[in-house]
Image (cartoon, rainbow, N blue to C red; front, side):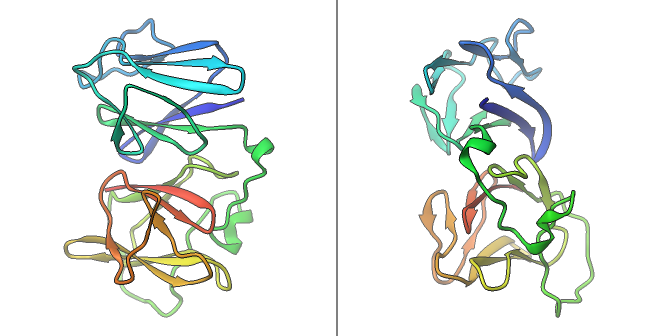
Length: 213
């Protein structure tokens, strides 16, 4: 059964299973997905099921709905789509068991708490940071990876792998190794690396993650 994961600044708030034929999203308490925020319309969007198709429709012109960073009036949802309403995000996921998706972050993924690998030879002191990655597909859907180190490696040795480096001006992602370079917002990563912006959708080795600054 498809589900929506509600997040705010990288923190998962709730998970909603799309059991009804029509699901209302908005600030109104009567909405199936009710979000208490003045940045959200009383009724901002609806999701309607038709067979295996889930269609999102915006309901208020004054409160835009973005899907994967693009404003939309109506669109069919696909696995991994990120819906932004106000300052909240809703990530759409189809049934993981049917998709057979695998987590490819690291050999440690078998643990209960997923972790991104870090460079063994990097011994820089950790510091606090609110920036995180949220996994938006696979068996670890919804899990949060904190970017509290100066360098965080995503992937595993021998497979597709990327590095996220924390610099003074922000977080940069670069390609380390593998056959398929990472993508950011479904675009191939530039050779020199790329500065990440809040909400960017990253894919490494089939695993999709959203960056929250």
